[in-house]
Amino acid sequence: IIADEMAIGMVNNKTTAVRVIPVPGKTVGEWVEFGGLLGGAPIMAVNKFSCADFINRGGRIPAPIHSFRNYFFMFKSLFVIALPIILQNLIQSTVNMLDTLMVGQLGSVEIAAVGLGNQIYILLNMILFGISSGGGIFIAQYWGKKDKVGIWKTEGIMFSFSIIISLLFTIASVFVPKFLIGLYSNDIQVIEIGAQYLRVAAFSFPFFGLSFAFSMALKSTEHVKLPMIATLISLVMNG
Image (tube, rainbow, N blue to C red; front, side, top):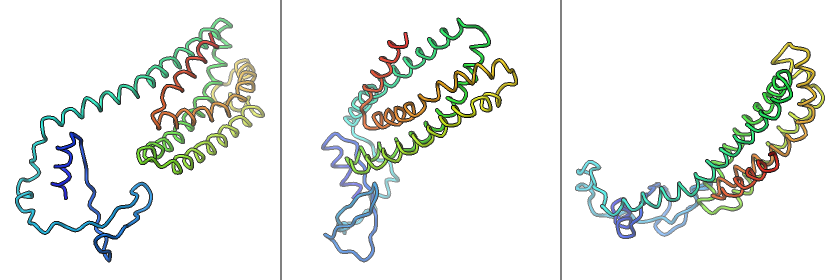
């Protein structure tokens, strides 16, 4: 089976793979559903010819020269997907830099207070990144399988957890902002200003959670331009 699959790959100039799964109790021609990402497959007859010569090669099977063409298409696809993501991160860093410059003009106490307030935002960002990254892995697998139902279910779970976590952070930041800022500083003036900032910024947390999950879902399905455009718009409006 492996040798046949290799021959198919050589003829079609493609990198191929084969998964051999024994199914006891089934006969040739029957269909088996493995469930999940494995999908289903028909039962195939095992070739009766000896594979001794194939095994004796010890895995030393030279790839055809034209298989290097696959690397060109692989790197091309990687570049098309990675470039917008790189630009989005660069734009996001620029937005954060502009925020720091604007706050820095108010004074050292203000920038310290905002910096401590952003620690809560960073903590939320880390949690949302974990949720969205885990969901993004499954979405990418379902996208490769063209399983839209699986994608929708995973997105629903991502959005649900993201909005719940974001709302919890919003509630805490609105009602006990001084306690949260006080975890990072004992300066009364910094705590007071930081609490005012955090109480206002908290209302953006649910929108941030949804946009984070939505952006990860788009990236996992090769739609990387829309998140980059949205980040660019935020940069223009922030400037």
